[in-house]
Image 1 (cartoon, rainbow, N blue to C red):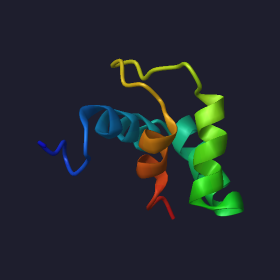
Image 2: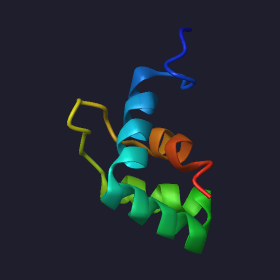
Image 3: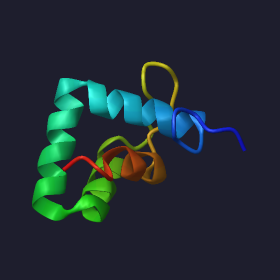
Image 4: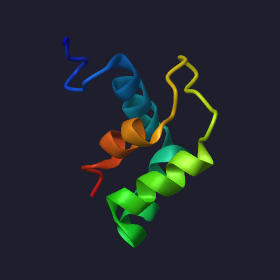
Length: 73
């Protein structure tokens, strides 16, 4: 399985790229992780982004979001 800049899939890499480089998304994720921890923050963000995609077409899902925010603190 090819790696995508350290991620397991293109989708996980793309979601991480958008969450970690969009000021609003990053601020929201950082605040949620600080307040609730990674697992609960990923659940909250997955519900927030449910049915949405990044501008590049990456699907926001819990796994991709969790991996994007796992090391945010």
